[in-house]
Amino acid sequence: MRAPIPILIAVALLLGACASPTATESPQIKELTVFAAASLTDGFTKAGIEFAKSAVRVRVTFNFGSSSTLATQITNGAPADVFASADDANVQKIVDAKLADGVPTAFATNRLEIAVAAGNPRRIGSLADLAQSGVVLVLAAPTVPAGKYALDALTKAGVNAEPVSQEVDVRAVLNKVSLGEADAGIVYVTDVKSAGSRVTGVEIPEQQQVVARYPIAVVKGSKNAALAHRFVDYLVSPAGQSVLAEFGFSKP
Amino acid sequence: MRSERPPILLAGLAALGIAFFVLPLVGLLLRAPWQTALSDLTAPEAVTALRLSLVVSLAATAVALVLGVPLAWVYARVPFPGRDVVRALTTLPMILPPVVGGVALLFAFGRRGLFGQTLDAMFGIRLPFTTAGAVLAATFVAMPFLVLTVEAGLRSMDRRYEDAARTLGAGRWHVFRRVTLPLIAPSVFAGAVLCWARALGEFGATIMFAGNLPGTTQTLPLAVYIALETRPEVAIMLSLVLLAVSLAILIVMRDRYLRAF
Image (cartoon, rainbow over all chains, first blue to last red; front, side):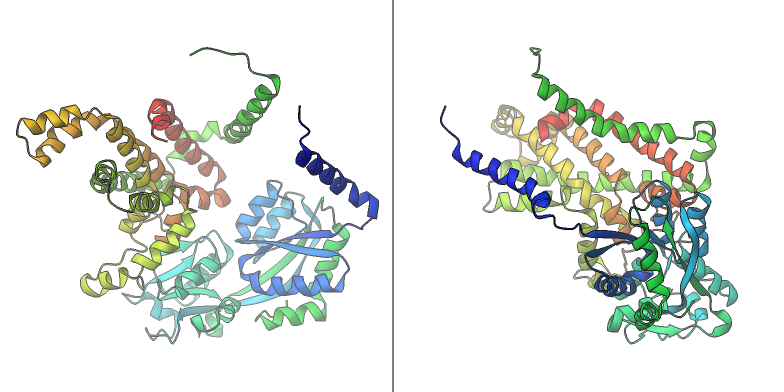
């Protein structure tokens, strides 16, 4: 049998690689897994970077999705350290499942806005305009917070508008508008801001507004519970609040 | 077939492989609410989604048959330059992430899409958010299954029958319709069934291109996704329906798809 030298080298390298962590005693990087509502995508990404800077060897990874999907994932055992929801109902699911470590903390609020194509070619000025025939309206599904809030706002305005699609989360609504497939969608103020020039926002007057309250909870069983609590503390601190404000969120 | 005692390592790894696929199904079965199965399956949202899924998947299969059988024939019989590349292009949706397919469909047939723009301007036809759009998305991902199966059938058939018909004076179209088509009928059937099954399970391209509205574009898989958060028992029962249909098809068609791919 001939000596398979490349294999021997590979094995040697592999053994070396396995041994190196103990050999050099390099401290482990702490990974914080944050499950957060889709509307928090930009704000939390930035907040995560800032938070990681404040601590040594911390990496924050995110799973963004509709709050209801995330709650389902966590109650089925997904390894989240922190859960930030766009409504109280979904964080309550975690509390009811005895999966919350402590009491959920409100850390931000958000408001609704109508997203329309850049420059508002259909001249949509109010929620009532969404009921006009020929206006292609997209909402989030009534099972996700943004969809529920949108229906609340339409009810307050006494408008009976029929969406052509109930998207799985608020970002999908925004995408359908920014791609030009839909004329309008009801999203959060922060979504319109994050879409930049691709969409235009049409304000919803105060009496028709719905305020979204964002609670955050540390998930019980988190391997990084201390770090998770620090992330929550950071978010409610002036530093965290100013990052969120940059993206259009208001104080809790 | 000669049976063989496998080496222990192979047998062990194979058993792991089986467990990997079977465990999720067992999980689903264990969580299924059997006591309320009937009422869950007859819940309004379930019935609407079942009906729409049947319509969309059957329509997609019909479109795939009309376009796919001729395409398979061309691939099997006409050695044009670049055939392999073209075939690869039309097979792409089989392995492309369906969401990517949905985005691509938007850029082609969406309101601002290459072709969608013309459709809208000239005929006032808009495909996104319509049942026709859901059919288009399902056809896009499912048709390659039919094309590959039919092409395999065409390549393995005995061409002497066609030659005989030709020497007896039959025209090309006549030969295709009266000789080729009956001979490859089993392949066409198998391809259509596989295509239908894939269309039935389509999710990503549909939600991207057609959206999600009960009764219009919310097919079974979309209904499962939405119901999972509000009525998980309905979602599980709908999943089991999809699973049972797919499993039955794979068992019945085992020889067919093994030969085609």
